[in-house]
Image 1 (cartoon, rainbow, N blue to C red):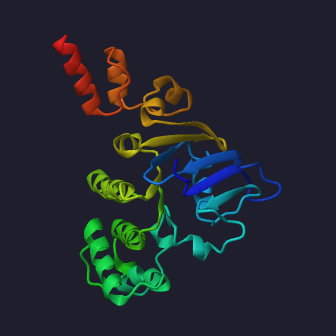
Image 2: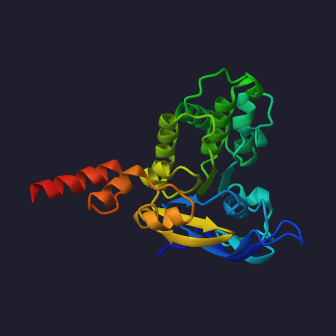
Image 3: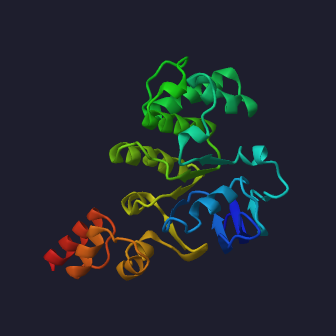
Length: 272
């Protein structure tokens, strides 16, 4: 078994001493090649957990290890080389005067040469389909374009782990799926992806594992079919199950989470 890229070990966290715990004894391992979908209601602790993965937040109790480095004792700048974090709002991470600077500043800090920087910038912009002059200010882009630029900046660095926190505001579903397919391909090369989203459809298409959070704890951590396909569990936790799963259950075809799974099972039954 390969060593985890990130180990979250019995982490407890609260923002102030008087506040209730936001994370309550959370433990989680993230390994190479995994695409993990994190779901749960607003306030479940998803974003708080995500910010622990790259050291933006430090545990009050417990610890987080990134490639063996304790986030409480390691500079966030060092961890950022290994864990890339995409904020919900792109304006939280866009600071440079030009698109080129926005894409290159992190690469320069990491010591990449000019030729490779240019190659990575070109590739990342092609992936997110952002065709703008590199000397243009990123602040005049539309919200969706700024979000794609933030994604490109993360892609250009190619960290070991990509943490994507509700990453597709202002981006249509088709383009969101296309971008996630790129991240999926990166998992095949040894990277890991942690996607925080309310969109069960996106997770059902791409995730290898689903983590369900509620009130600061992890209720479920299993294969997508075991979590997203559990209609009763989702409904009891205020989530609307996928229609394909509901139809599959009503027709006695199991608990499919993808249309192709439903079609395959239906075809089997028709051949009997």
